[in-house]
Amino acid sequence: MTDIPITVVIIEDEKPIRHFLSESLLDVGMQVFTAETGKQGLIEVATRKPDLIILDLGLPDMDGVTVIERLREWCELPVLVLSARTQETEKVRALDAGADDFLTKPFGVPECLARIRVLLRRHTRGQGAQQVIEFGQVKIDLVNRQVYKSDVPVHLTPIEYRLLTTLTRFPGKVLTHRELLKAVWGPSHSESSQYLRVYMGHLRQKLEVDPALPQHIVTETGVGYRLIGV
Image (tube, rainbow, N blue to C red; front, side, top):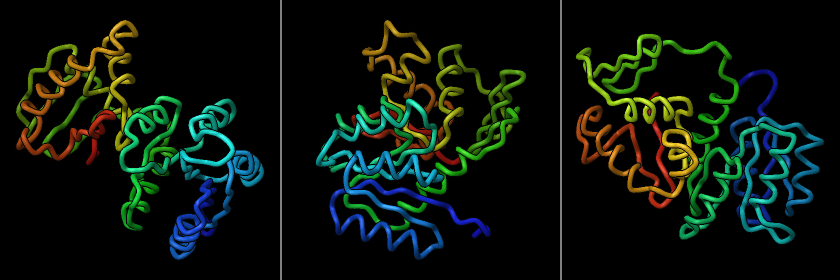
């Protein structure tokens, strides 16, 4: 750990989960502040100026998505959302509102800490633009717009390349169907998720070792996709 501990604000109304999370983060040397309501959470974030926020969507006083929207009016800190297993629609709403990632209840400490590390790495990453990005056997030369798999050039269509580079800009982050469609095809196609499935299939065929069991271009069922291993 660094001399200055990582500070986390947990906004969660369920006492057992709040306690479990707090103790888990304290055990690895983080500084933790908690809130039971959205209103209290917004005050804690403004007061404590944390490095990361963990937010439950089901709060007693306001919708978790509303909390995210209010945070995003003045704050770009990473937000890790907690969600019930069946709330895929809520996950999508939260991500579209500005959340960075989500954990599905119930979850384990190792997964929670791994998600936190990824979010903190991404948030604190230097401003210098990367020229080469690598994951698995894939190398992307952004300057020359070339893609290689095991050092062999791979031909991508312009749309496939835009889709891939959009994923690389947010490594580890879940990008919703709507976000990807708007970024690659434009706002008029934001509901055309069939386009996305087809082109993700093309990318996996070209870049994954086993397209049927992708290790890097990963589906978050009902929500979107994330690129891992970068």
